[in-house]
Image 1 (tube, each protein chain N blue to C red):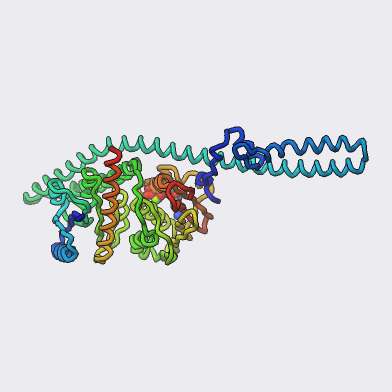
Image 2 (image 1 turned 60 degrees about the vertical axis):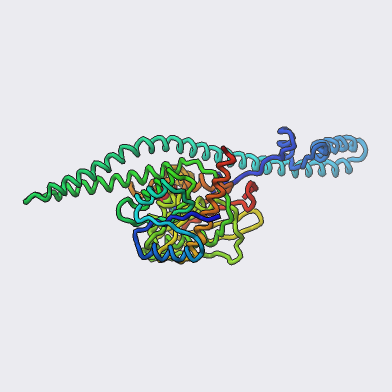
Length: 336
Length: 132
Ligand SMILES: Nc1ncnc2c1ncn2[C@@H]1O[C@H](COP(=O)(O)OP(=O)(O)OP(=O)(O)O)[C@@H](O)[C@H]1O
Ligand SMILES: [Mg+2]
């Protein structure tokens, strides 16, 4: 099931007033500046026919019946069209809404967490320094005969490792909140994906997981922000690696059409529970054990991809696997 | 325009080889043996691209990377990672590294990435000037 927030609905034609735009979309009629003929026809033809039916009733009943049937047919046909278009419009409005909400939510959380991360960074640095100093003092004192500080040293080591953990979190938070103006340069996406895959290969081999690359030779290059795209690809690959069992399979592939370059990261891992599908892009949402995941990976991906003018979607079947699809527009500013 | 490159690595042999190989291409390369030395060096001279080993004694590569990105946000950093450590690679990218290169290093690959990093730095500098 594709994630609805990722679908970007077609914007209304700009040169139409809002009412005309709505009418045009609802009726399916194209309205050009003054040429709203089709629209008029759409509303005027049925009553005209109805009037003819009434007139014909007085002439011959047969003609009236045929005309009436035609009117009913046309009315039913256009009502059906109207309904599907209306529900389509409603769906895309909802999609646009939830995408907006997602972006706003991410921005707000970004600001908040940057503040917290900044505040916490200082005490963490002091704790780290003090732990180091204490370790030094212990090492000095240990030179005295008979002194044994094994436990003290253990607990100092523990402090260090917990401080590192905190630092990791605050770094991620700060990164998450960082405002990035994408810097566009010509990027060989196939190579970028292969590069990131090489970072994952080693860890994958420990799990006996194969990481397949399906990258067409003639994949066009893309004007995009290279380091941001690297972060996205690496995050998706790492998630896939965490989701698969020993002996699993991950496939990274890419293809291009006229509008967009598409990257797919597919795995045959655990899949995502249906009730979690709506939450996975939320910051701090994680199903990993405490200390294993911060739940910032996918929300970062969402922020980065949207910032690059692209979309990110997920397709998952529980117990069978997951595919993340990133689409990036080939011409900056156009639809992906 | 010359690319001002700083290589930060405690492995003397590797640094020497790199100085030679970049030298052959008429690309002068400065070097530093530790993170602290790199920061000191950068305080007196401007660099476009820093090639940074993530595994060094003393201040580790990631901490160095963080400080470089804070103090010289326009300077691009390429990480050198020993044995394809996913964790270090991930953290490095999160901290704003431009790219990474695996050791043992394929020189042409490194050269290519240095050029790309430099291109980005120039684009970024231009954007900053226009914004100001
Ligand atoms: N490929 C996947 N297969 C199954 N579940 C996934 C996959 N990718 C993401 N998820 C689910 O989405 C959640 C959120 O992912 P996200 O990357 O945001 O955070 P995380 O991986 O848990 O932690 P972090 O990335 O911060 O270390 C995961 O905890 C997992 O439940
Ligand atoms: Mg993750």
